[in-house]
Amino acid sequence: MRSMANLKLDDVPTQWYNIVPDLPEPLPPPKDPEKGPSRIQNLPNLMIGECLNQEFSKERWIDIPGGVMDLYLKAGRPRPLFRATNLEKRLDTPARMYYKSEFFSPTGSHKVNTALAQCWYAKRQGFERVTTETGAGQWGTALSYAAAITGLKCTVFWVRSVYNWKKDRLSLMKLMGADVHASPSPVTEFGKKLYDKNPEHDGSLGIAISEGLEDSGRDPKATYCLGSVLNHVLMHQTIIGLETQKQFEIFDDYPDIVISCIGGGSNFGGFALPFLGDALKKGKKIKFIAAQSQVAANLQGKYEYDFADYAEITPMLKMYTLGHQADMKPIKGDGLRYHGSSPILSLLRHKGFIDTIAYPADEKHVFETAKIFIETEGWLPAPESAYSVCCAIEEALKCRESGEKKVIAFNISGHGFLDMPGYRAVLGLG
Ligand SMILES: *Cc1c(COP(=O)(O)O)cnc(C)c1O
Image (cartoon, rainbow, N blue to C red; front, side, top):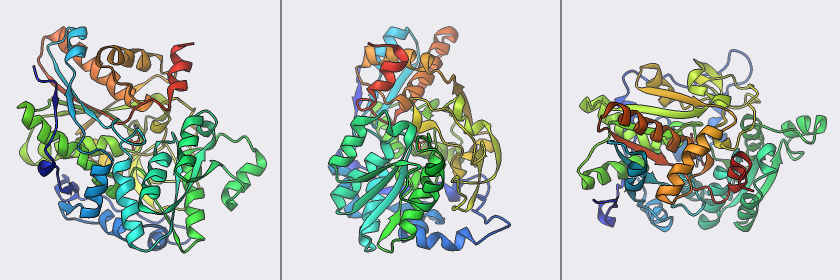
């Protein structure tokens, strides 16, 4: 039985998929709050021009520039699709299980797919520095990497509760030449207000976004990069699902269930949107499941306009949200801890195309279930990706009960080599 499929270089997709023209109804646009200055008019001062164009584009296919294609190859694309043959045996399931290997990434996560595109466009536009926020640290590492290899400087504001325990990620960002601040930090006006009150403030993604925006806003040579949520970010990530579709052709198979973990929605979107396109245009019957944490079950929140950041610098987005100033307890799969969800995925959830499952905050169940995958398939998923693995295993066990031979596709958004303290703490590995 074949257990891996990959693409020849000539078959690697050369366009990203923009699902916006195929959505069941028009995507609600960003909007300004009733009071205060226009956030929307300020966007060109904050964002890379080409990314802003893409954010509002209605073109179904957008060419990946040759320079970005080359960076994708340098970062190890295309990435294989594996059949989880050992795991299937261990679970004694009639289901056929396939996983996409975004863990083959120089920084350990899918986030390089958009970081490379954003830095390439920023460089072409003449910027010298990129700024950003990071929660779990994967986005900060991905942007540090992409900035380094495209010749840009990089400043990262990192949510303090995670900064404090992911020492190896901090070292990696510094090795790549980035400037890294625990957030809230004393180096921005907004951060300083919170920092002065409590220098040990845990921080949050929303606060860190506010700091990154302020820092780029005051430097004309700097621009801000966002690692998830926005339309153009999800579009850059569709390279994942587009490759996967071609790899399924090699396997001569097609998924019944498509699963990934979700924070802001970039890896879920990247993996699932090409298949959601099949569901919308070709009437394919596919079940989509977003795996979440109960501390940030954003897709189970309210579908309404809300800010993307704590300090209300961004426009308001129509999305599923827990409220932009919600307190969310830290977890080891910290990349899932964001109050809102991508407007595109929110609309599709609202229309009934996406199911969600939220796992308990102590993460024991998730990591113990993921351990079965590690023991059988041998890859170490990122703590966030463990949610995707856990959900896939649960679906396969349901097939064992029902005898159904479903095809389960799941995305492994990153590896966990830099996040080992998370596994150690939850599973007590000593
Ligand atoms: C950031 C991250 C996530 C969650 O963010 P999304 O934008 O929802 O994908 C999940 N997995 C990994 C490995 C990440 O780095």
